[in-house]
Length: 300
Figure 1 (cartoon, rainbow, N blue to C red):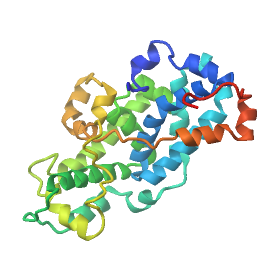
Figure 2 (cartoon, one colour):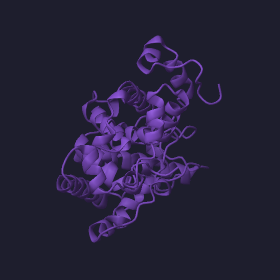
Figure 3 (tube, rainbow, N blue to C red):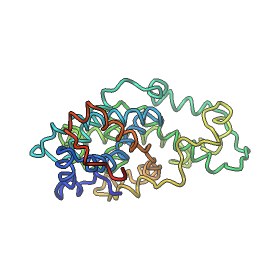
Figure 4 (tube, rainbow, N blue to C red):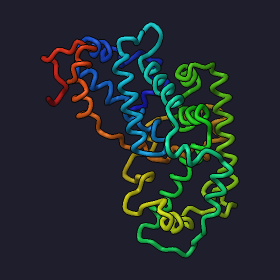
């Protein structure tokens, strides 16, 4: 699965256009295929914006409904379908109601202080110690992102984590390329500053070690050894999905730091096939798309 946000996917024609035209004409299989392409990326953006699977799943469904119900308004003369889709994503996550983890984690100094206050247990042993240390690391890094304001967070995700180039990112954000680069630069500096000053995984001179915090996380119920929320070792990492190249010196300077975020899982998104099929069977959606009962989603 190649990133739909990769610049070549947008610049070398619009592979979504035939599917869009067919979906507008009532082809449910084409509509499902469009959703299959974009839903995993929408979910991974949503998850990193809110740090919670249930919230991310709800956000993804709400965004998909907006995409489906506004499909007739998409104008191919104004840009690629993928740009239109991710502009909807960006607008939604910037303006949605604040989610539960955003209430809890929203300030770098407070977040770092809370982590540092947790007792260290360097001699703690556990059969899954390595996996649990990775869970702490991934969760902590996601928490760092929540300390960014939403505009900085989404730009950091697009440009810093998913490797979106400034031309594409600016179009999605509806801002200038220079503005996109400036926001990305500020966000990278903030996250790197706090992580380099605190995290032992980023800077070996720091005292904080993920493995030493495992027992505290378990004791406080912040982590479940039987159900990891953030570290998914069997899932492909982000870097395997984006195919991004380091394009300039500034990117190269940040490469070791950003590599930690690109090593994180590209999370498996919930299967929305049944939900989508039921949605398209409602009278409201049949009317919107003038759906032909003779055209069925693959597998029906």
